[in-house]
Image (tube, rainbow, N blue to C red):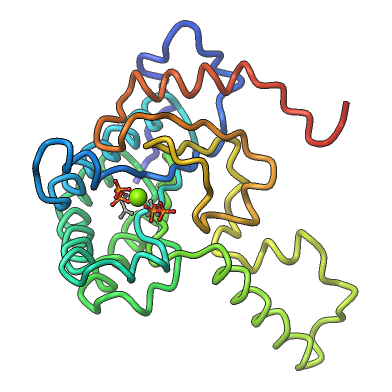
Length: 249
Ligand code: IPE
Ligand code: IPE
Ligand code: MG
């Protein structure tokens, strides 16, 4: 497939194209509260949340943001009522099947990170198919964190590295940040520049613990299903006003 030319559709005039984040991460929170405020079951919030994510992906694609990573399901979310967990698994599978064709058209490369083996087999199959058919796409790299936990990710990296040491393939001295990062699920991605969390919660909830070391945080009270292009524009404006020092002066 020939990659689409890079076009920056409708980038707001006050946003500097040369200082866009290269990687945006998002904790999509507040679906349940969004539904509750409307007297609806939580599931409706999750459904509307999918639309908000679709919009954000489209926006990243239109504005030339190379990578978007979204937190869809944490290792702790298994602790929710079974009905909600089952609904979410079914929703992920259905949405993936429904949206794959459009993602192919949009040249999106989709990836899933997390402990995927614990997911329902039919969802795993859909995930594998979507990753395989979009693997060579050159557009926005869209990573979905599903059954993802930052601590779990770090532990599996430690185990993989320890095994290499045990087998005599690696010297402990050779374990540096670069090597360690290569054993994380996000090995091929640059660290996020911008983390967005909706619903006003001021916490990281076990998301990308290693990778967010120097990300700029943008927290909005808006509940995830209401997050839209105007909100993303505000997040980018705020991001471009930040002074990123990386520990320097
Ligand atoms: C985020 O919304 C979606 C997932 C965690 C799957 P929530 O379901 O956490 O919504 P609130 O936080 O209960 O409002
Ligand atoms: C974080 O939201 C996980 C996802 C968005 C998938 P939670 O709603 O699970 O986080 P807490 O429980 O408020 O920390
Ligand atoms: Mg929540």
